[in-house]
Length: 491
Image (cartoon, rainbow, N blue to C red):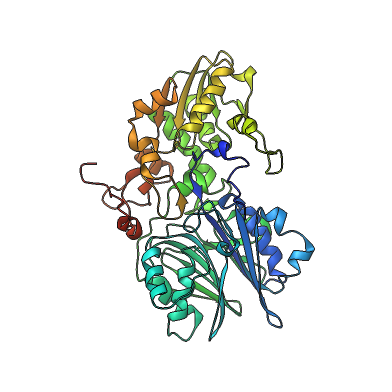
């Protein structure tokens, strides 16, 4: 099966953006549940553009599953496909590759996964990454388990199968107590919709209501698309079981202090979502404000790198008093079928996706605001475009701290040696990218923008920020087995 890139052609992404891996969505108590699930997944498409799947249950015909490569809008909108998914209970998943056959995905790797147990069937959809999956997989295979996919998420199904508990909910609890890492899980049986977050709540999960039905989703924007009301976020370490219009909440892992992923605020979540009770847009706007205070520079215009840099650029312009301009236009219509990506087309690089408005840039000192720098390759290309358009100076302002460590909790990041900030100082990065100045928001500034007035609590951080700090709240067991070196006291 083909691998669909995060962007229409690989050079446009060039491994230079972190990618969230999954979006999950489930409904119960809604007629034609699959239609609502498809809409929810469409709203979560930014979290996974490689493939998607939906599982539903209808009492007379049982469980139904459809999995497809490609976009939701292309694969889950025809009446013929949706007729294959009857019932008023369903869950869905959109994915990129992380664990599993990364870059060479098979249809068997596409979630939701389904297992038929002695006490009935259960389907699960997982957002995150299990940091002890290799250890678990080895043990399960030695005990006779037969894996169908290369995904770490399948471990959960096998662990449930081995549990001696009498209900699916208790089996799911047993399974999740054995896994480590980041997981937001939505599961369904014949009568129940269940949602669980790991003890730190690294990956998001929210509860909504629509009429007499309930919804679980990765982000609030997926509730908005179907007109559902946000009830609340699922707490870190909480499990909810929804059946017959009732919600039962429990804490399978005991009391825990949450440390959700702060990069959800910077980049992953849609700007129209609410995360941690805060508008993502407002947080990103405030990041720009903090960045302007920390890293001012004399310039003529503030220009975002679209689309993710726009809210921060607006905040930077407002705080600095420097005019905001849309100096770069993003081509929204470059699709996979636009043109065969030959070498000549690939060499066009970011110009296929972005174009500079020369009249706004020529002769100007330009502040470019972007969300992050990973490898730095895209930053260099954008800088070249701005200079080619006649800019007098180019200053980069980055709406996150330097990304110096890989994420093992469900985000696709290069190995540490390929992260620019892991191998260069800020000044070396500036020289390598070739700009007049380069400044990142500080970790404390990012925390202030996210609502923590005193900045980061270094003794007990409020968020997971391992990709910036190198402080991993959950030891990456499998990676340590492979030789990964954790941050030392000297670093």
